Image (cartoon, rainbow, N blue to C red; front, side):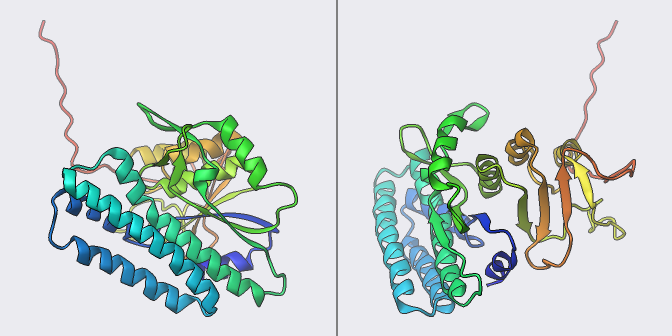
Length: 311
């Protein structure tokens, strides 16, 4: 409900919204894989817990029965596929990387479809009547696996983006985070925290005016508030400053996530879903602030050993 409030209050005519899974869902899905590998006796009850939670959320959000039936029908089909895949894993007692990707990616499919349906209901009462679209990122982002992790195939992805986001498209496009496809069409994921990476990729594909990462803090902090009570929000910092803080342990957006935005010089805002009135932190090409020191960060449990060669 809060996310819908934020999106419908945005004055922009065109929004691309990348959605992560509901809290703890990805961990629960990967837990199912681990349980299937061990043929755990509680595998069925774990699946039922996921099923019950999602159905309860749908019931609490959607008032139009036809929308709820459509969402739950797709969800039931996914659950049937999931049960079949987990059964196969339990027989061989081992899950391959592709199987893990398929299972882990269900969370984003379920949450994004539900948000799109809920926005559709809310949009009917909105004076602007924005168009709501659901976009499967597997039809949009093409990646290639490498030693350094997933690499975006930009030419193919941009060609797909032109088909999905033509000049005539208005309203809110709800896009699955975390998941993508490989050149052969097989389903894959972008790794943990992949939804932020997805947002940056989509922002670059559509030449976005800005990218906003909605999180649970008011912005980038000048220090860990648990250790420095006087820590404040850094109003603006450069891409390099943000990357340096992240590298040395600060909980800032991951450098990999920033890369597509950096290449296109798209500003990134870090804002709080639970406090949308807060201005947040701006990360961009230039610092925008004359403060000589932006933040203090630390890395725990590190030992430095210096070896000197004897003459």
